[in-house]
Length: 352
Ligand code: DP6
Image 1 (tube, rainbow, N blue to C red):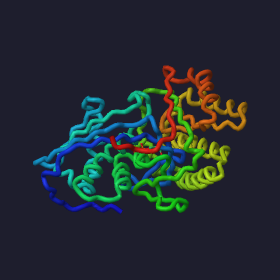
Image 2 (spheres, rainbow, N blue to C red; image 1 turned 45 degrees about the vertical axis):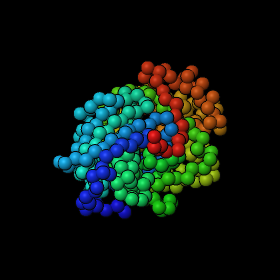
Image 3 (cartoon, helix red, strand yellow; image 1 turned 30 degrees about the vertical axis):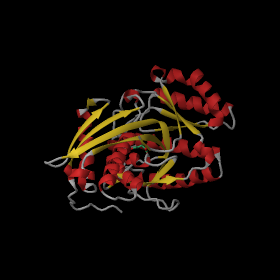
Image 4 (cartoon, rainbow, N blue to C red; image 1 turned 90 degrees about the vertical axis):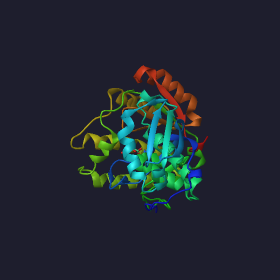
């Protein structure tokens, strides 16, 4: 495991340069909801890594005489709104990346998906930034375990970000079912070919950022009346999901994925205080999907939800045309300004 590193003074000549990474968002099938200690999940989670929805981040760096300094620009503009989260991230990671104390860095970040789409960008943003920082470490030190340390550092920014470092799927959190899985960083999950050909169309039901942040939602799990049953359920669902992959059992895949999505929101509905992120149109779309599946036996279409009102439609490439027609004819009315984003399972981050 990574331990805090005591101070090392690096040669000045190595302390300037720049790097640039593209890192995708991800969608959890088994949900991370609830944490302990410093960004440690209460249960294992598994996600598909996406392809189109990503952040592109560049970091340029030069020596600093007065300790670590950073400037952050999002789409060319300074965003004071992100300062608190970034300050916390840097405070957490500097013990593991002490060379930062000798640097002044400039971060430039942008997303391929609209900022106001209601799509959480913390997974792609923190993984892209962490990959840049580990790339800088690599150019100064002969560090090993590039992706593992990037995932570890991403986790300290946002839990779900640690899974974005690997494609096409990734697992974070200790599980006896998955070799090498652990709570400190994610590991790549070897997805069978059939599931690599899955699409994720995100239906934008609400463009506004949500009223209750994921961080507050996670905290409400700590004393939740259903916490221990939720931990058992997530582990059982992970087992069933892995079996559905192995057996290419689409019905079982659908059952588990929808059960996880609805349980996530059931945990919010039953926390103290409780809160509701679903919107009437989220429920309308779910009912439409269930009717569609009744009428189209053997169709792979199912849904999952993140911590918001938007719906992720998951379906195999073979069903692309029929599902796209269904979206256009029956679901767009429920989307805010008819907005949706077609994405698919992707391979993971790329260095530019
Ligand atoms: C519902 O990773 O956003 O999307 O660690 O506090 O930044 P923090 O939370 P975050 O939580 C994501 C919750 C989720 C489920 C998931 O992605 O597994």
